[in-house]
Image (cartoon, rainbow, N blue to C red):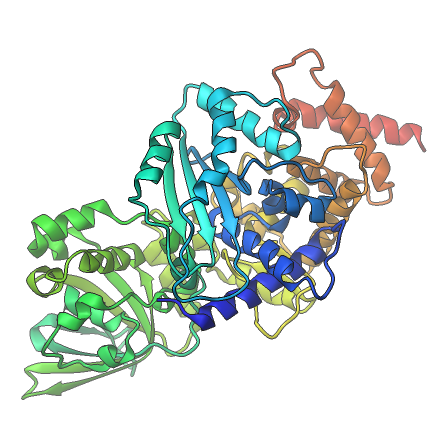
Length: 572
């Protein structure tokens, strides 16, 4: 169970998110030094949402938050939020995620989320159900209108409500009051408390090591070439041993000759063992139903049905014992690069029954590859990228491991800019960053600037790290240009926030960055006015066409380019 130190670490992380927000958006009401709890509360929103809104940066996430206090502080306008603090739309998976946050000031090991917390949001759910939006305003109304539109469409959308707090214990999800909430509004209810948040924050504060004993028939060594002194191994490992060496208990990880395995039924997965750049995927993924079926019905088939686990260790020591009938192996500073979902599912299956560890997991085996990296980060990244490429990890997560992305991160760090290649990344703990940008957001900016296609920046995101990737990040890309690109992005955001007469939209920023790049000497306010006029006049008679849909049209971009040329020429 997460304790006081986790609570304190979360406080620090939340304050960092608030500080990044103040450096990213011109906040209307900057909080004073003594408003520490309010700062943490705002940072808490951003930290949690970032793990769900993959690729969204602080600007995007702030637009998703409808909480009245947050919007009053950040934008100077706060409307009644009807009990929902944030709304995230997942268009790819057709999911609507609703969030209610509670941030407690003091830690208590016995504190539990209140059962009435979800019911505070009933006004919002009722507005969806009745489609009555009278008296609802601002971002709250915008979110409800979109939800109602989606639910009335032909596609099937799933609604999930998250009750999120920094309390020590979850709500009892089997409570009959929550069942009633599910039945009335046809939604799934999930609880996130300090334990889950602890796993999200899991840091590799120290190397994770383990000792294992194999029958010699279960192990096959591998060397890359004859002169190599570094050996890697392919092994057949009992699932119970996999649980032991990836547990939070370091004493269990070292006990290679364990006789009583019953304590393993109580052990927890140490999320620090998961490779940093794929941990976010594993934390947000669902348990693999097929793996659980195999464990329940045909555990002896696990070795054949599953792709196995891939690990990398900085040091591997193996020695033959008992006349070489056994092999004792020590793996130092190891990580799971591939198979994180399998590992998590096996641990979850272990917790379902105390008998599973002895009756099932001690009797089935799984394929494990253990590679020696000798501390070579590039080798680790390549193994992670290639072994995960056949799995359902996003292309962005895979590309986050590539050397060119690490080069961008390192370059921008010199200018105190945090380039987040993965969700939840707030950089070096000892460094104060002046700005943060996500890898996905940077790709969207490149699509607008480098390819000159701002119309595709928002609705072609899935191609940025696949078919567009080489043209954006490799062919002719100069890492020294990244600072200028980010400065244009910051300039565009500030310009729109300083124009109260126009509505801020993410897509407008891509167009403005594109226009600033094409006409660097032109006044930004003039460019905004031209863009806004083009939006209002494009297919003016078509009331069904929203501004957002207008800006993804190629004809809109072509019309804007023509207007820019004509109007800027007339201005001299």
